[in-house]
Length: 99
Image 1 (cartoon, rainbow, N blue to C red):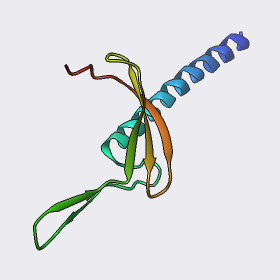
Image 2 (tube, rainbow, N blue to C red; image 1 turned 90 degrees about the vertical axis):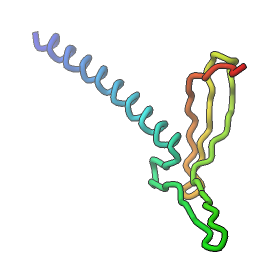
Image 3 (tube, rainbow, N blue to C red; image 1 turned 180 degrees about the horizontal axis):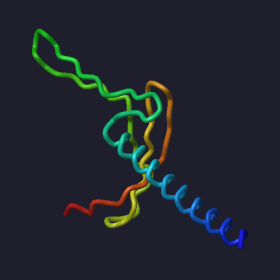
């Protein structure tokens, strides 16, 4: 009887930890898409030239397309933080061919 309860608790623990892992991974990708580093919390900086009034934006996150698997396939991006050196690869669903 104790074996069944312990296996049930272990099974539920595995399910919840897997769901938590995917939730954290998705939130990290959302932060990287916004331009915020999830490791050092560096945010995009905006500067304004007082003479000309032109606004400049310096982003700490650089993204690079690694692979594109067609029009409706998955796209893999590499995100790199210029302030702390964080490097992560995430995949996202393609947005179509935009013909």
